Image 1 (cartoon, rainbow, N blue to C red):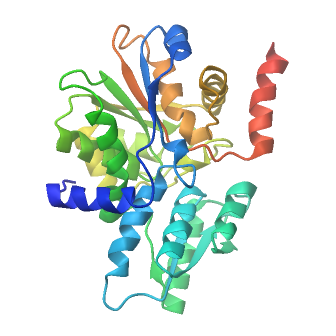
Image 2 (image 1 turned 180 degrees about the horizontal axis):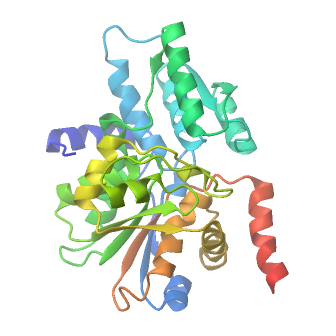
Length: 326
């Protein structure tokens, strides 16, 4: 997926009218712990606490100019995409309905409602919620906001452009670890790498308990896989998106899976070493960097802390587990 300079400039204008670029740091304690420099892009510092808001802003800006302009929209989410929809829909004066699976994050649900979203609970996982949202869209004449779309990627790539352009040419990290939910984050990283001419290798990261993209990457076709992750809800995808998979096959150096235990440890490390709160998917990049640090033993790596929207009781259990182990 490629974007013209004019498309990139337009997306940046839309995003930066609503928020500034996010911070990026190489934390000394992470370097000490891993033995390599780790550059952290803090997408947990956006107005909704996750990178998704960028895509929502660009998608809705273009939807606002559509003829006829939709009166209402609907989407499905495990949380961060829904907050993005709610934020952007409120900005452009559209009513938003979001479908979430039963058992979804209590605090993400509350955040969506606070943005004016009408929340519906349906199904046991994201795919079931997504299919129900599509059905409601047809029945009620609502515009279905997809979870993967060119306009969403166009917004998301703005943070990866910030990341890659922060380094002098040829001094980018050797590898960047990119969490994969439905694929907009990885696709945006690949698009930004092409746009900036960066040379970093891209490694996709999935949950070991939601492996559709890993299985599909290996078999070079979409393969559905069950979802059992209890921590990385932002990566809890049962069925890969074919367009995103084709980009993954072309652009990824590798795809790796990290367990909930590895993700929990990465969440604890991020809090200890940087005092940032990471949700499960937000810590997956660091979990992969720890797992694969011997592969790039003397070179800098990059990760995105893609979101910090974790329920207080879940984060409390994650932190307490380390105390119990000690």
